[in-house]
Structure formats: C-alpha cells, structure tokens
Length: 261
Length: 282
Image (cartoon, rainbow over all chains, first blue to last red; front, top):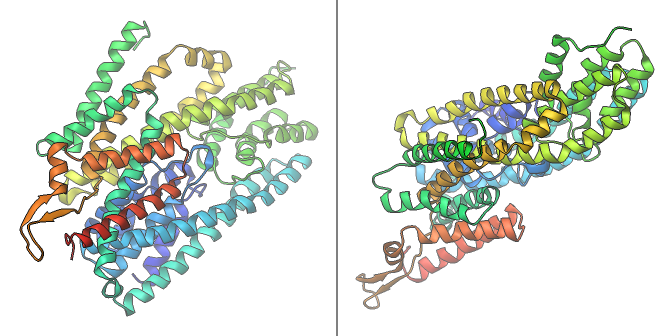
C-alpha cells in the first residue's frame, strides 16, 4: 500500500461514516458496510478476491451492527477499511489474512468510536451558529451549520486519523514481515475467534427479529436446512425458499384479514 | 390574501436536502435538529420570506430536539411541510406543530429501525453475501448489487414516505398504521429474515471442540473425537448454542456488543488452550 492508496482509502473511511457528505443512505449504510468496504479496498489495493474473503468475515460479525437511536457500538467504516487494508498490507495468504484482519478491525473500530464521540461533542458548537441564524431569521445559516460545519468536523476526525494509521501500516508493512513475529498459538486463537465472531452478528440480529417464541422455530428452519442438507443446498438456495415462504404467508394472511394485497 | 401553497420545486428541494444531509450534524443537544431546520429552510423561505420575525420563529420551531430513523423518517419533513403550509394559512397553531413533532419521534424511529435498518439492510446484505460466497470469480457481484440496489430502493422509499407525509396528512398515516397492513409486511419480512439468518448461522459460525481421547500417551490413534461426536448427534450444535447465548446476552441481559465480543475472546482463548492441552493443535 502506497501513499496514494492510503489517501484514497482514508477518503472512503470518511465517506462511509455517519453523516458524511453523500448522506447515510449512500455512506454509512452503503460504503460503510464491511462487504462493500472490502470490495472498495480490494479495488484500490488490486486484490478483490482476497478482500472479499475478509469482507464476508467482517460483514457476518457486524451484520447486527445497526444504529438504533444513534448509539454506535463501533464505527463500522473505520473497522472495515482499516481491517481489510491492514491485513492486505501484510500478507496475500488467505488464511493468514483472515486472522490478521481482526487485529486491524478492532484497532480501527476503537479509533472510530473515539472519533464519533468527539464529533458528537464538537457538533454542539454548530448548534450555536444555527441558533444565531434562527435569531436573525437567516435561512442560509442552517446549511452552513448543518453541512459546511458538520463536514469540516467530520472530515478532519475521519480522514486524518485514518490516514495516519494507514501510513503507519504502509511503512511497517514495507519494512517488516509482521507475520513472522506472530506465534502459532496466537494465529490458532485468532482463527477460532474469527469463526465465533459470526455468532455475534447473528445473535444481535436475532434480538431484533425475534418477537415471539414461534420465531425461534422459523429460525431453525433455515438452520436445519443447512445443518443437515448443506451439501445439497446453498445459503442462496435457502434465501429463495425463505422468499417463497414469506410471500405465501403475506398472501394467505392479507386475504384472511380482508386487507387488499 | 390568497392561499399559500408550497411549490413542487420547493418540496423537491426539501426532500433532497433531507435525503443527503439528514445526519450531518448529529449531537446530543438537539440530535437531528439542525438537519430538520436545514431541510425546512426552502419551505420556510417560500412561506414566510416576506417577514423576518416569522422566518426566525419558524427556524426556531424546527431547530428543536428531533430524532427519527432518517430513511423511513422522511415522512417527518413531509408532515412538517404540510403543517407549516396550513399554519401560513392560519389553520394550525405553533403548539400543534410542536406537539406533532414530538409525537412523530417514537413511532417513526421504531418502524424505521425495525423494518428498514434491522431487517431490510441485513437481508439485502445476506443475499449479497450468499452471491459472493457462491459466485466464485464473480464474487464482486454481491457488493456491487448491494451498492446499487440499496440506495435506489431507499431513495424510492424515502421519497414515497415524504410525499405520503405531505399529502396524506396525519389522519391517513394513522389509518395506514392502524390497518394492520404494516404489521403484516413486517411479519412477512421477519419470516424471510429469520430463515436466512438460520442458514447463515449454520453455514458461517464456527465453534470447534478440540477435545480428543487417545489410546495412550504419545499415541496418535484417536479413540474419541468430541468435535465429530457432537456434530454427528446434531450438526452445528455448538454454533447454535453460541448464537443463542449472544441472543440471550444482548436481547435479554442488555449486554453491549463490545462486552459480548470480550466474552467471545475469552471463550476462544479457552478453546485454544484446550486444543493444545489435548494435542489437537501443535
């Protein structure tokens, strides 16, 4: 990873964060998702297949990481971009990269949370500008406070720290072979940790989706289909079955209740 | 005095401003207050542009504390536009506007978070992941599909909700909510999500049980491999138990995800140690 790549990736860390200039629909919920972030990093660092392997891993672990009520458990944009870029900077071996990605994702996520809290506090000053604008009846000051001020703070707090971290990774990656220094037992432990992290995403997601006890049975349908028949059916195949089941459920019940479908 | 009506152009401007910049200046004091005032600025200019006092009062009305899920919640600026228009025509007073704003926070946040953010996004990502997982060299189709599909679908939804809020008024919105159709849609999407999450859990969560009993010291002849044994009794039992544990800790015990991550790290360390103890790893 060179300086140009580091700058480009840092730019995406900013674009994928909450409240960037492109909006949350294109930013946080899109460029900030691990699978998309990994694809972008893969394109920039010219290793899309490996980046996607890492993206799958992170996306599963963080699938339940949404932001109800604006409470950010971790900054996905930071964790994903720094995680994937960090792993790719040190190795091109799939298994090693899958273990290393956690080290950098946790590092990135930690910095991200600190920056989010900082911006949350600093943005209060913008409210003074907006209040003053309201006092004067100046509608132009709303955009000034919301977008110009918000982006100035957001950009500095996302782009700059990300660039510092990535440049450090880049310099270390060129001069040392980090992988040689990691003992076997640590690699083994990271691999087990990585496999278990997917349960985090799934468990959190279940806490949103499960509203009644019967929902556990519905969950088990998908689980058992793969558990027992995994050799014959893929996750995509189960998704097709699930769509059919949902469509039938909707149609049957909308007729029953007399709601026009 | 002729009746005041917001032009199509102004309404479009309000929606675009909201769609792109609804999360730009979040803070603890007024949450999305500045974003609402910014989005409403074009409407306020058109309705009260000839009076500085009215403009100032309107801006202050919308700079107050406000929060919602910003995508489904595009309904809210739509409702605000309708209310301000009625106010400019003397049909609604300030207190009503403030009361409606506060009343909208809860339901729009809840519906947006549970339907769009916690259901539609994970399901779309799940399908994207399934494609990446199954498509081999064309794995990039997964993220690419999500990158196009998600923003386009959300833009349509957001625009629809905004127009619903403006045109429908509060009555038709509460009618729609009471009709049961929303619950039915949510339940159908939940069923879809639950089945796919079940498949993902069985497919991707990995918990090894590195315990083996060997026939003698220094002997490599494995008598009982507990990992194989457990999976023969019930495939992927340990991943299921771990996922249920996470569900229990986050959903029932209200643990933070970071805390759960710490617990997973501890369990992973214990399993690694067990593996070395039983010489499964070397």
